[in-house]
Length: 198
Image 1 (spheres, rainbow, N blue to C red):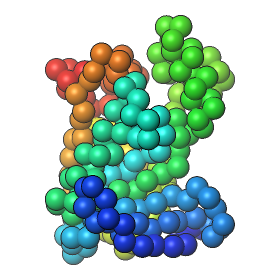
Image 2: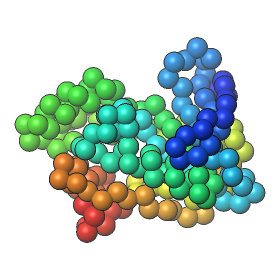
Image 3: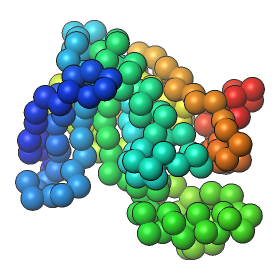
């Protein structure tokens, strides 16, 4: 079972957050995180974002995806309205950075994100969100507004002991490099995206 291993207040350009590390082992170098806005009111439905790690988008500002922009938008939103970002170490839809770069190489040859993963013998999306539910339970969160476009995340909450009060879209307009990626999200995974933005 995961548990809280460490926590501290961290000032960011979006505001101050309580960052909490969760893992089974205190020596885990890659724990899951809860990033809790300082003004979060736990007596009301809590704004929550399940966000999977994306080093290319978040650190290097890749234009192939909207992950970095979504994380920034979620931090801004939770700072302004209260809330929690559950940051999950599931790089590249949980295939890891090496396989992700291999998939990128296949995408350069014309495959979409799903085709590239399958050609490598990998799942289209291997992420799991049960650990996010575990983290919310450890934080005693019982009622949430979920910031997502992903129906799979909604399903995890609906099937859990946590009440889903509402879904809040977190849509980033497409650029010339991310348009195909977002279209695959919509067509293959059923993400709730507006046509005029992708």
